[in-house]
Length: 220
Length: 216
Image (cartoon, rainbow over all chains, first blue to last red; front, top):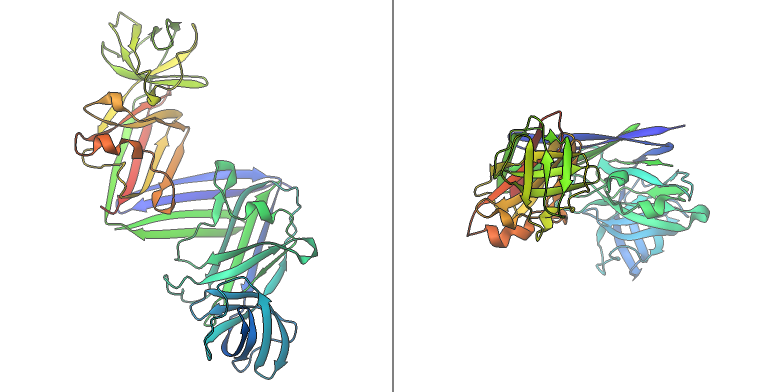
């Protein structure tokens, strides 16, 4: 079944606006909307290394053994990705992740955010040609401070759950570029990797509000 | 001044990148109407840069500067020799310039001759390193746009070719190259910038608009 997308551009200053709309047709499209629950306040009690340790989560958390979580600074910047929880004793949680992100600071008592990854199916054949792609992350509620650098960690995974690509999707209004009309010559950081994707996992860098991750692409 | 650069993907879901910036200065040019060109009834190739073209109904006079369009090519900034009736000689082209475009085509090629519209962009300094964003919109079939010091057209920069209705956006702040950057060393301080435009259509006038912002 054929599909189409419209990519519009709008450049404006006081007194003049330039706008265009490009219609793109392709064999099919994929789209995804994922609701990301808020993260939980965590306090570091033991730092094992850059990407492992023990923390105390706020009351009411729903993290369980074998949960996969991402850890963010209080400003929403990724510290450690893909942490597997190996032990949960009440609010005390033991985690070990991959050396992705800036690493866990060596600061006893550090407050940070622990967010469970949400996994979604997104079957894109590995022979796909991508014509246009867009993705975004938006908080449900007030936006974070523009200067905070808050960004959701999003990982595209291949068959067998192997890592294809991790991107960090900035929240508006932080500058970012996530709408690409490939047919018109735009480049995108994800086009080489989303072909062959089967699963997308994402987490919310904010503990004050829910977020939504959206992804769409036009492919043949 | 707030400058907004927004892009939207819409296919079942709508994803919008909205990227407002605050720049100290903004400028606009246009809308400028670019008159349609004239179709040739014959074309004679003398050399790669000279020849003559017969243009029924034209309004060219001796010394006019115009651009030539044909299927698969264009030649910018050619000068009309002594016009005689419908025959307009092509006596010179700046073949030492990047702006010249292709060599003139073979005898009998159907060409469109379009007089250039010169626009003063006094004080805009479009190629200045402080320029953060440029957007140009051409509404028409095809057209050429290039920046030049008005007082010395031989320094014309490589032209920007528009094909159909087209919006070109140069987000220099985010890494795009300024298409007019090459001219700054000769346009700043010695003379002023101008923009020259022509229209490759023989049936419809075209329109040009420009938006820019800078942190001067």
